[in-house]
Image (cartoon, rainbow, N blue to C red; front, top):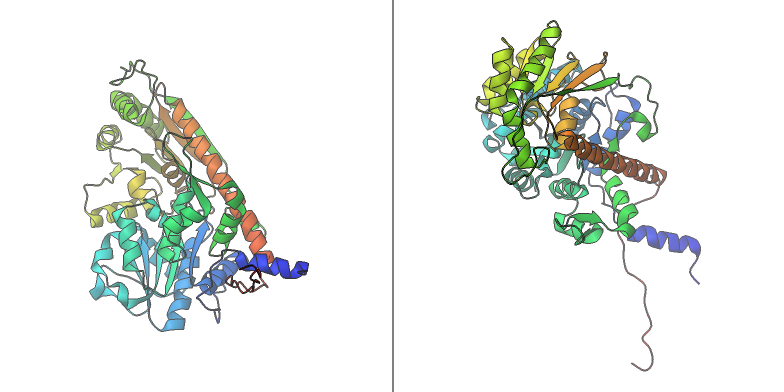
Length: 457
């Protein structure tokens, strides 16, 4: 009869975990907090891994220290790809901690060591010249078949060391994790879906959901190549110094006569199409409310979020001197205007979450307003977190202007927030299980049992 400990080893061998392809670092920066040190060591050991850490937990320093160690180990270069305007912010962070990093515009400007570039410049770079790559705000991979995701996966498929960093890897859809696994070379998206998910035909959209019997295995698999934390205690460390200030969410009504959208019986019926129709009908009322809020606190820095150019136009007319950052500007112009806002204690900026909602640190600002918001939880979460993050010393006031019927958007966002919180809890439990097994070697399953053929055959 098989010994119980042998059976446990047999089950552990069948567990789907990745084989580390990295190395143990010779040294790590003294600037790292203890939990950050453990995360960096894990990421380097794993070789191709992800850091799903909440805003303000030091992802920038973690990825810079990871890059420095890879440069030191390989004697080659590492590329850090960032959202627009975040490259120079990352370079300033590197200088603060004594890490040499170069902001590159194209392959000709690459320097030995760590190089930082915006995603928009990817086509100007030669991936073969880098031993490692870091994707900052890697939720850019979330598009299942998007050109950006495909380009990143194909471009760096042969890069030995890869790191993906974001606070929102899969805000409300666990299958988005597959895009990270695909980029890192951990597992192809199709294989992940077939192993852990089922196409739920009980819903009209036939969404993929986790197989109930595979939930623990899925999170354990993720914990073998990723670290996720909302606060240091998720990694078994003290939360001292990582307390968020209060977040005050204030809702304001945009009053006006709203006509029902085409195909709708009542004005209160809300779909994505109807939402844009309502926003267009109420834009003047919304802009008036936001302008009144900004005027009431003129000495405060303000971030004013909108979704369309017509909203930006209406706000600009009512808030003279506001910095306007929109998609039609050149990359250099956008970067300059974002830097202008970051350097001012009382500037006002009008922009979209899709342009400035990722990666930027705006702790100098504690006031923001949404002229309206859509159904995207990630856009909402990331936009709020530009200001409400560890390092913010003041309460953050977030104002949302809504029209009749838009209260259901809030309910959708709340549901998605609950889904995101559930994902974080499951991943935290899996990491703790993984850390409890840290002394065990992870070995691939080998079917070496020899069966006996029946005599009648």
